[in-house]
Length: 250
Ligand SMILES: CC(C)=CCC/C(C)=C/CC/C(C)=C/CC/C(C)=C/COP(=O)(O)OP(=O)(O)O
Ligand SMILES: O=P(O)(O)OC[C@@H](O)CO
Ligand SMILES: [Mg+2]
Image (tube, rainbow, N blue to C red; front, side):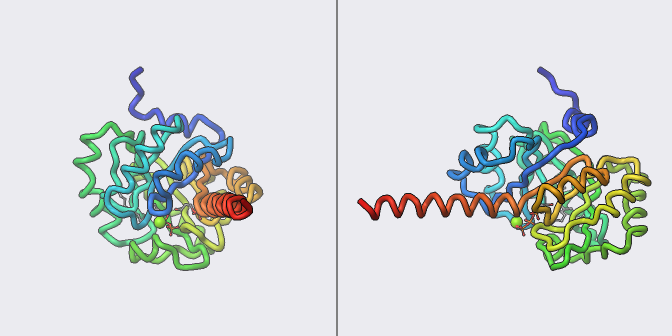
């Protein structure tokens, strides 16, 4: 069946709550993927794949393996142009609009354009807004931009409004992977009220209560990476030590 060119986007707008697990290709081995997929929450609607620093070729290997074993849509969340992988379903075509580093406003986009056009990836033009998460995160380090303080709600709203005027299709409010403080619901609420675009929220979310607060405030899609990664690693360790205890006792 032929897909509409904006099918993923329409589904995100149409569904009340979407939930993505972020898989950072740098932190997962190909052979772990089947187990990892078994562990994702039942309400997961999307797999995001990407990282701030990913070794060449790793993103493609991970996407191909995920595709073999899952029917969830895979959306690239790329830290740079080398992560463009045609086997995914869509791509968040990010512009880091909270900073003024031309490389992350337009440079990486130029480098990736031909490969994206040549692919069948659905492109979701995304205004990516980095908000202070209480510690220096990989995005801040790699992009050499400063996050916006959480108290500067009006500045965040203006950035999102400018992004809407510039034709962006979705807003990503990001506290940074592993953030100590996630994006405050007041910020999500203010953006929801004033900006006519769907909202993705991620960074430092750990509990169902925190995730619920994001939806209540107006998030359309919530992303969790680190909390899931840690839980998965912990379980894998427990399994390995169980196997070791068993084999030692024989
Ligand atoms: C349009 C294309 C091809 C690329 C966009 C390039 C831009 C604008 C990137 C924005 C800045 C950036 C480095 C974003 C990375 C976003 C991301 C995938 C974060 C995931 O988490 P990590 O930052 O890898 O977290 P860890 O530190 O936990 O590994
Ligand atoms: O890893 P966490 O903190 O869940 O953050 C997810 C995502 O928003 C990071 O870019
Ligand atoms: Mg990473």
